[in-house]
Every structure is written in C-alpha cells, then in structure tokens.
Figure (cartoon, rainbow, N blue to C red):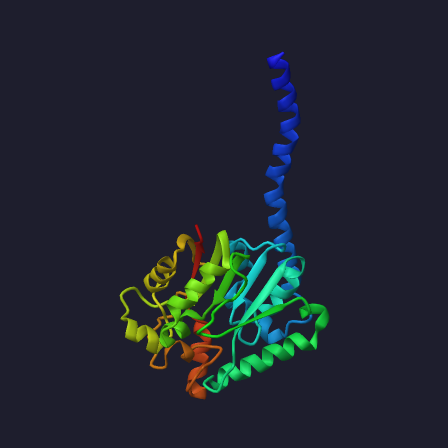
Amino acid sequence: MKQALQSVFRVLLLPLIATVAMAAPAQAQDAEAVIDKAMTGSHRPEANKARDKYRHPKETLLFFGLKPNMTVVEITPGAGWYTEILAPVMRGGIYYAALSRVTEQSSDAQRANDKTFRAKLSGDADLYGKVQLSVFELNAIQVAPAGSADMVLTFRNVHNWAKAGTADVMFKAFYDALKSGGVLGVVEHRAKPGTTFEHQIDSGYMTEVYVTETAQKAGFKLDNKSEINANPRDTADYPGGVWTLPPTLRNVADGQKPKYLAIGESDRMTLKFVKP
C-alpha cells in the first residue's frame, strides 16, 4: 500500500516539477521579448537608440533579473532615457519613477530634467500612463512603500549623492523599499582602484569599493557583478572628469571632439546587490 501511494505521489508530482522548471526560462524569454520591443519602438528618439551601444539596456536589465510583472523603482531617471524602455516593459507590473523634489536649491540641470521628464509622461498617456511618480525629499526619503519593491535601479547617480553627502541615506531608502530577497541594481562611472574620495567627487568616477561598501553599510549583500558596461578605452583621467566624454563633451573644443567621441561613453561598473 505504501509503495502504491509513493508511486501515485510521484506521478502527480512530476508534472508540477516540470512546470516549475519551465517557468523560469519562459519568464526570461518573455522579459527579453518585451525589452526588445520597447527598445525598437518608434517612441524612442534615434539619438537615444544610438546610445544603446554604450548603455546596453537589454543586457543590463536581464543581468539584474528584471521581469515584467515585478514592482520596480528607478531612482532619479533624469530626462527619462531608461523610462522609455521600462515603462512599456513594466505595463504588467508596477513601475515607480522616484524623483527628487525640485526646490529653490535645485540645480538648473535638475529643474530642466524634471520639466522634460514630466512633459514626456504627460505627452503619451498610452505609453506612460501607468508610471507612478514617487517624489522624495532629503528629510523624508521614501522611494516606494516599505517592503513593496522587487527591484530598485539606479543608473549613474552615485557620484551625485557622494558629492552631496547623501549616499548613505539614499542606499538605506533603497533597502527599506525592497522586499526581502529584492535586488538593487547599480550602474556607475568607474574609477581606478585606489582613487582618493576627493578625486572621485571631482571626476564623477567612483570606485567599486566605495559603492560596494556604501551598499553593504545599508545592509545589502553583493550578489554579482558584470562587465556589460565596461569601456577599456576610457582612461578616467580627464581634466574635466567624466563630463569630458560624450554625451556631455563639457568644455571640449571642436577640434578635440572626434578624439573623445572615439572613446565613447564612460567605463561603468554594473553591480547587483540583494537585500537578505
């Protein structure tokens, strides 16, 4: 009798195991397909598509483990470069765009980005109508409801927080927003190992050690890292810092632009952290 019950149990269990085993690859394929569709969409300006070769959005998002049914938070999305991809991809989930509140102390660049981003969202309700804005202030940083997010993403922002002295509180806010097991994905301009903190601030390039230690201080564990966004042509030693390179080309004479355009955008670390 016991052997008969075990046989029945195995017969019933095997299809379930097979279904679960197939689910993960299927979800990955679904994520890849919707990212491909978003990246090639007519809503993206050609100038933004041209930057895919430097930013590798598909490979980056898949590395972090993005799924279309997740709750995802993007931190300070700027003018919305990644939003053009994330908004259509996340229509089956929840996508928060976390913006720093514009105040009298805000920079001209922040004001311009905020205006451009909001205009982007309001200009296409079909595409961006489900994007949820999460506006935070330094004395009240909540980028999403506590313990609600599967993933928090930040692209090239850490140097700004380090300069402002707010990196610790920002990473703590990411930790608070995530579920247990949730992912923090960080892409940041990469300084050479051993670069002083002062030079990191001046140049806009941060060391992997600084970013990792800041995340660990907030409670995160480093899960994985990738060279998806590496650029070996970037020497990270320009008088004008990372802003010497495209797309900014700050204070670069016309005759020197071909040199920096040939280098391309900055060398970047791609780090995946997990909330235990």
